Image 1 (cartoon, rainbow, N blue to C red):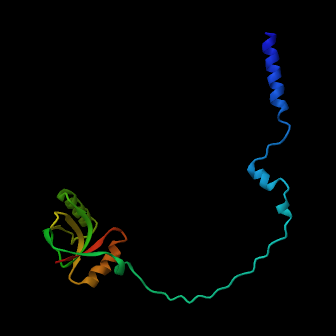
Image 2 (cartoon, rainbow, N blue to C red):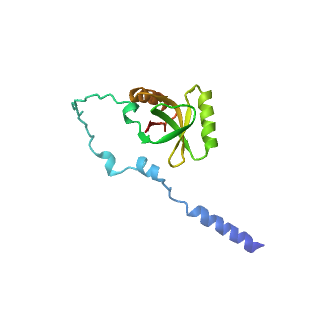
Length: 153
């Protein structure tokens, strides 16, 4: 019993006796301990002025929207030469479901077209002229960011 008591007292003395110096954390070492770098001269910064001639160029999503020319067959609905495609599916059921959702969202001119690779292209609108199609495509891309222009062959 006395041996255990002596061991515990010796352990307590060792643990408390070794803590004679303060341990600094890295943050305290930088900000609390004095160093030679804190006595350096102050640095002055001169303002820099530059002039740039900037020409503003108007760019819209119309001009950068992707377009593809394909030979397609209309399977559901009707379509003109320039179609805004919002989805492509190998499964016709998925394409039909998207077309119904588009019609419910107000895209009455929705259609489905099948290409040579049996992909079902779902279009939300189609137009006779490319300029009309690109104008509408910019609006559609706000909701369907991956929309693109299909030019029927």
